[in-house]
Length: 72
Image (cartoon, rainbow, N blue to C red; front, side, top):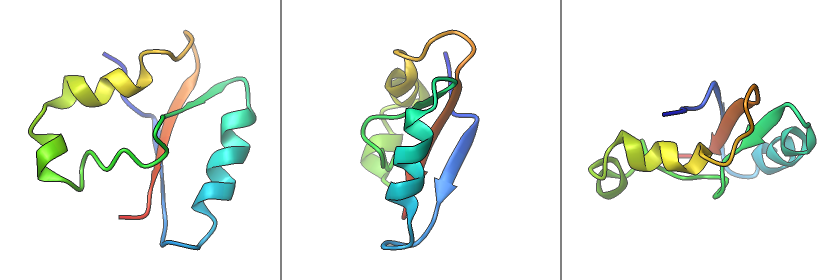
């Protein structure tokens, strides 16, 4: 099970989308889809378990650094 190495956390309209897009272009970085999974902010998603969250990163290549972004 692979989980993120880092999170982009910021307020809405504060540049998180731009930073996410730039990082997503880097070949050594894998960013989640969707950009804002909201796993830790929503009880309905959290209750599905950590494995369901880890599924967002299953397409990452070996050795890539994993990340996601959130404004909440």
